[in-house]
Each structure stands twice: as C-alpha cells, then as structure tokens.
Length: 193
Image (cartoon, rainbow, N blue to C red; front, side, top):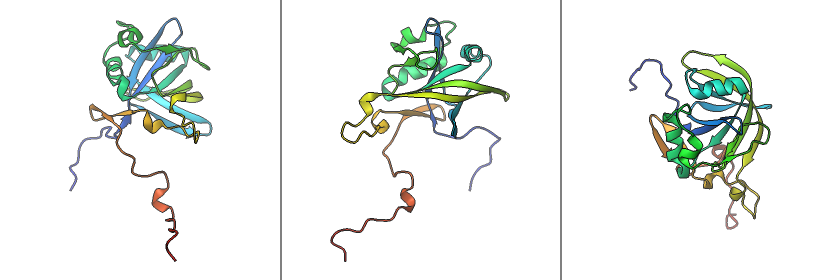
C-alpha cells in the first residue's frame, strides 16, 4: 500500500547539471536539477530557476546558457556551485574549473564536463517558485576522449556521470538494457536446430 503525501516534485533521479551563463569576461555557474529534454525536432530543452538566484538575471538578460553534464570527478564542484552565490564568489576559480569559449553562445562551457549543450532561450514561462527557460539547442559539445576509436561510438557511460535524488548525489549504476531491449527478438544460437 502507498502512503499519500501532499503534492510535490518527487521525480527522481535528476541530472545534476552545471549551467554556465554570462559572457567570456563575466560568467557564472549554477547547479540545477530541474532540466530536461522538451522536444527532439527542433532540439529543445529547459532549465528552471528561482527568480532570486544570481544566475536568473544573467540568463534572462543574455537569453542563452549552456548545460554542462557532471561527473564524479567534479561532483564536489557541482554541489559547491549550487550552495554558493556568484554574487560572492568566482565559482570557476574557487573550484578549479576551466571555462572554454562558447561556439554558438557567448557564455563559456565547462571543459571538465563530458557534454556541454549550448542553448538559446525562446521563452521564459513564469510558473511560481521557479521560472522555466524554454530553449533551443544550438550545438552539443562532446568530449573526444569518450569516442571509441574502433566503433566511433560515443561512450558517455564511461564518463562517470552523476545524478541527484532526494537530497543526495549518486554515481550511475550498471546498465540493465538498451532502448527497445524488452521487445527485441532473441538471436538463435548456431548450435540450435
């Protein structure tokens, strides 16, 4: 039997993403869990921010941001950037993170991130405690070190991605199947008749 609770946001786990925003000369990082895919064609995603956060005004002014996926290697920096304000700290310097110039946006991406997704805001949707920045994906930057030289496959599973669930960060576990595995036909072995 399930216990009934008041309405809340219990959709876990979530990505623990570092959002970079601003300009090459003045940029900030903020950690968000409220981000995700909205549409594939055109490629669109979103982030949700509280209006009182320092990065909110930066994103609303520039109308662009970069979503940087995070790993076990930068987990401490990811948490730190979510609890400290860019009003008071240079988050890049404080955490030893490397800003890389944007390709399609003016804000830098995080060099230590295995995937950085550059976005342009199409619409700000005012919702309540958070506002949603609905954005079009302009380009995706992928770590070349994760591309298998033999197959050319992008091995994001080898990057050590982390997620956030109900107040804690988690390393990703072992894969249990690929998309569509539940309906795939089993291959016949060579020895069966």
